[in-house]
Amino acid sequence: MNFFPKILTVAFLLSGNGSFVQAQSKSPKDEPAFIKQAAYKIDSLVAGWYKQKNLPVPKTTDDSTYARRMFLVSIGRIPTAEEALSFIEIDDPAKREALVEYTLNSKGYSSHMSNWAFDLLRITDQRVNTTATNEPYRHWVRTAMTNNMPWDQFTRSLITSSGNGWDQKTAAVGYYVRDRGMPLDNLGNSMRIFLGTRMECAQCHDDPFGSTARRDFYELAAFTHGQRTDGEEKMSKIWAGVLNDEGISREEFQAAQVMWDKAYGMSLAGGGTGQINLPADYQYRDANPGELVAGRTPFGKTVRMSDDKASGEGRKKLAEWMIERTDNKFSSVIANRMWKRVMGKGIYEPVDEAIPADKTNNPALMTYLTELMIELNYDLRAFQRVLLHTQTFQFATNPLPSTVEGGDDFHGRKIERLSSEQIWDSLITLAAGDPDQKALRPFDDRIHAGGRPVLVGKKGMTQLSKEVLALKSEEEVRAYLVNFTKEIKQTSSASDEGSSSMMGMKAVSFYDKNAKVRASELPSPAPRDHFLYLFGASDRQVIDGFSREPNVGQVLSLMNGFVQSNLVNNPNAHLYQSLKDATSEKEKIRRLYITILNRPPTEQEMSWMLDEVKQSGEGGYRNIVSALVMSSEFLFLQ
Image (cartoon, rainbow, N blue to C red; front, top):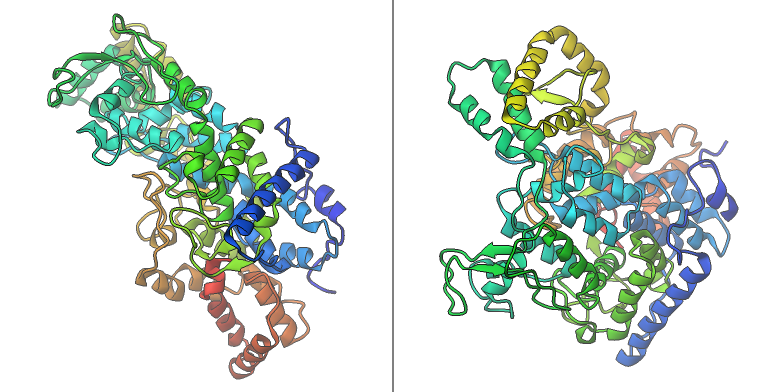
């Protein structure tokens, strides 16, 4: 019996066995007819570019390259052997359209989008110099990507949310809490992320390379000024006393630290005063150092805050301005980010330095994409669906660099090395099978005191933070601290650790650096000795801080590290399971090629590999696996 099942019809792709499912439309315009019309419009605008530049129309890529490209771009991993062969062997003109729907509606899509969002927002598991965690914020973002939250709604939630950081209804406060103590840096990042505007230099001086004055920056910062920890004043004296009391018990210190860092410290109050004092070193003649200035937006339709009194709605006004009053800059930036994500290169580069549509290489295309994003109600999956349905996405690889500066020349996909996450997720697909069939990292709200989980099965951080933030006075906080300390003391180590091992096992396993799960489920940032770090994963300190540059450590890792121990020399690796019922050496080699490179070998490659197997016996297959995984074809996207 042939190992590879033949999925013979597109109907099965669209409605089959629980994973090949029909798209669930969330956007009013996310319908097949509209998608095709929008894709055709994009292709027409690209064709106009070819005519303008006197360029030949690129050829359409072959099925094997297309399938691998589709999987890596839309869900961040290579197809399994079954998926690759099923697509290649289906003889149906509509199979490419079906593959778009299959990938966009798989669990892998939200995993891959989560990686993108985590890098963009610099999300880490822990906060530096505190015992606080970003776990609820991370989970909120992961859920938003899974549920395909519209980008305008997502942005508005980040900019305006207040309240309990552990409550998933308000966990978006993590956007500010992650940068607590650095509100000006946070604002600079917001402008880069959502409006493609670099203003960070204006924190200290007028921007010598742009038009932003230092006063402009502070007037914008006034919208978010006045953020504070919710209820902090009720415990600040208590916490100061705990820190200065040398005779305090270990349990009382741990209880106070949990309440201060993880309950109060992960909350946010203050909707934005709309006023701010200029810094003491302000050096320009238009105002005095320390002078109080009101909020005013620097471009788009001007929004002003009151000069006379503080407001509590500055962040709300800022979000409205960003999304609705910046002359479509908001929609243009996210449209260009999605174009780069799908096509490999932004219409303009860098993507966080936006330029008007009429200044881009293809003004008509940039204008249309901006309008399309609005028409799709900022549904990022629907927008990517349109791009993936274009003929432009299907063009053959262009090995030459772009013919225009600062953007895409639209003439075939440029070759690029896979991201560290794409490589990792592809390797674990080979090692352990389809990773999207595995459980996701669960939301871990266990109370950790002194580095160990306590009260497991009795109370979690979600409940504790709700109780703490509801306390109305310093006296109530003191009384709660006394009771909480008693609860920790009364919880025996043996019973507590036993409960932890039973109830927290799933959460703990995802912190194993070699766990064979998607990169989006692993610790963030990756440890310095992890495969992801070696291959350039972001440390999440700066926006999109990843790298695809090669180094010696990457070569050594492929030769001696995770790949060799978990894949090449592991007889239980998933890719070897496909060889068990193969009846010939040729069939085994063919299956290895389809599993790793997602295509059959050429006649010359088959000849080379047969010689290797004859010379090395069974060890030859391991050598083939090693060679293919280390090849440029595996490590690069075409």
